[in-house]
Image 1 (cartoon, helix red, strand yellow):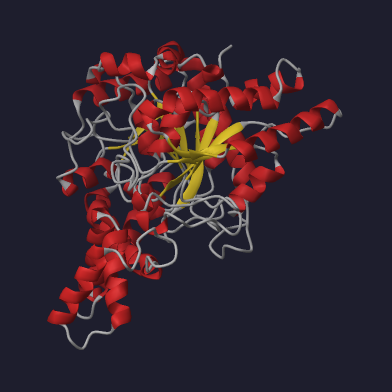
Image 2: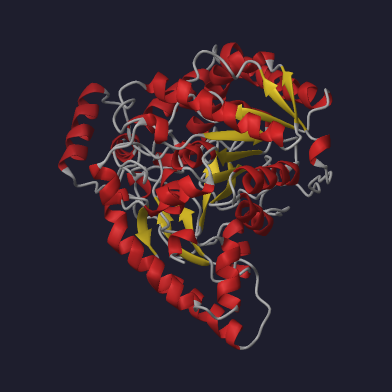
Length: 514
């Protein structure tokens, strides 16, 4: 079995069965990254020395006959907005290019306690602002299934790493679909947990009321294992919850899945519609009942999300001045000329403000600047009530729509993840609105704070064939949209992760052969 076919469970049984050592597998993954990632661009950097130390400690534990966690020795990739002590954490931005984390995120502490191995930090859209991973300040990540296409975003590096077999699993973050959409584009599994189910301590914030850390994996079972390891109340995050997760132990013939009529509309492309229809048919064959539901305020979700997100971005990014952690030097000619020009235009402006202006101007990319400006506008006097306050009211209505749908007797809601398959690199970079529309089906889940699981529609044989395609082979034979991965999402009740994971596991086993 090659490393590309390894799941967390397979890795664990091979390790405790002494078919291989953790160090051997870690070295093999690091070699694969060295050989193949130059073409994909999933990783910003590897953490070779630390990974080998972690793996060696696991091998000692196995040799001593200690009982080990399922994740012990498992080679994981970490999105670069999640802090790992003594490692760089750039959030994909030049303004944090030199920032080294002084502490571990809570999820990292938990994974270290489980003795997982961290292979490296993955690429992402700058401060998680994007749907394609083209907004990174450092590189563009490509979809392993077709190197001419995007992997989705903002967790595109993590999804690409898992899909290409360059990690057994990965962590991403999801603010408006940033785990689920790249998982769908890359043909892997992604879980966006309930807001508060996983601590955000140590996550570089974009939108604090929406951000959530979650797993990207090859199977639903792996998503459950990784989620179990990172979930739980955290005193360092006041928004984290100690509410127990619900599990109803439903029989398949008792499961009812809702289809929101507002999601299956003309904007859904034919390939996506066809593959999701096939998945719905497969669910029916398993004895699962399908029922139409309505989420009437869906049409307002996109504008509501962007108003709230812009506002919180403006507040959260105000803390970054670009002086300490970027590589922008105050003696650089562009900054000197900027300051001179500012002094000419604004003679009363302080030198410190000029430095902030210049450093932030050079440190932030185009998308963060756009969102900071729009966020400052919607929070400004005279516009707060007209935009931000109204958006919060509509957010509550969107949550109530989901509550009513679940109260009607459905156990989960099935919806598309994206209106299209992965689009070509550069196709939407000059059209922000078209890029924003990529998240139209995922955004409502974040606004409502619900859990959602992104599942691929392709069967196991097809997916494994895709995973084995070399990047070079993919580049020389670009894929037609009909053969690209398509995902659908199962949306659950608050803290109902185990219900959607259970449905997903049955679907994966019976319909995909995993």
